[in-house]
Amino acid sequence: MILIIDYGSQYNQLIARRVRECHVFCQIESPDIDVDAVRALNPEGIILSGGPSSIYEKESPKTDKAIFDLGIPILGICYGMHFMIDALGGTVKGAGKREYGFSELVINKTGGLFKGIDGKTECWMSHGDSVETLPQGFEITASTENTEIAAIIHNEKNLYGVQFHPEVEHTSQGKAMLENFLSEVCNCESGWTMKSFARDAITQIRETVGDKKVILGLSGGVDSSVTALLIHKAIGKHLTCIFVDNGLLRKNEARKLENTLRQHLDINIEFVNAAEAFLKALAGVTDPEEKRKIIGKIFMDVFEAEAKKIKDAEFLAQGTLYPDVIESVSAFGGPTAVIKSHHNVGGLPEKMKLRLVEPLKYLFKDEVRALGKEIGLEDELVWRQPFPGPGLGIRIIGEITEKRLSILREADAVLLEEIKKNGYYRKLWQSFAVLLPIKSVGIMGDQRTYE
Image (cartoon, rainbow, N blue to C red):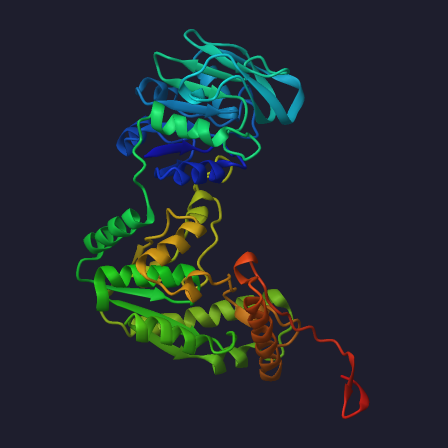
């Protein structure tokens, strides 16, 4: 396992993605993680991310410098290297002029990060500070025309630093450098796959839940569907999914979901038709934010009422993903940062005194799709495009009526059918129709019409 400490870098999730592409698990933590917590995680290596701060600023994020005495290999990237230099007695200064873009990296010493990479290679710079003096024991391993100290090593302590960003594609040999850090420096085994994740997750769910009941708010999206199937594989009929039809769904949405998850995969799903309650509450409402709030409140009321019917339930499952978790541990968010709540459940765990089960909380979206395929979820659900919790309600400008919903459903269905037919569905992140409440000129019965 690799520990990534996030100092506010725009690339911190990309670092994690690169590590996982090498089939090594990694976890992102905030700079205020203490040394005992690091020991408890027992990482094979640590990566210190970049960040927008300057290490010499009073409020710049820092970690307990005792991490450098743990005997764990550490790679500092940009600001992460500056923190390493500052903590160990070196100095960092403002460069006067920011260096941003491609630079030619001249490698002075091979091995370590640069094993198999000789001579010169392109790297991506994005910094306004640079190292002025090195702490004792460090030596320079690479330079650029504008940055003499572009890469460093402390052989005895297994510490590495780079001024550039190996995680971005613009650094041509960046992936090889990270692979070298993982395999050559940290001796990580590349055994982390979705197959191993599924096996471990199922075991953990069983150990956590036992023979207790679990409730899941099922939306029909890939996150909740994968969560449902994974938990079902772990505890079977002890899982009950609640699907609320709010009357704002796409064409044949509930029927497709029932056919896929309940009939084919034998997952226990309670379908609740609450369309009338939603549409009644939305009558005459045109403000989009007010519509969102009404839809959210009615959903919570309906979901809570249904959840209370499930006697002796002790757990609530959520399809939380890793980007949501990362928001709470960033250098500039911290534990009090507002995290996007799952639209299905909101504050229900506290209200009903349910414990949370979040089996996907360390996965990125593409990993969730890969997991879905691994555990047998049908492609139609695995590759589903995101669909908002308020449904078609926010894709109708103005008042929501049955007639407008019917028009939009048909238009949306035709659009998606054509996109799929022509092979574009997986190439597009989202594709959807929007109903605009404006009149348009047309022809009806050979006559001009304006409606």
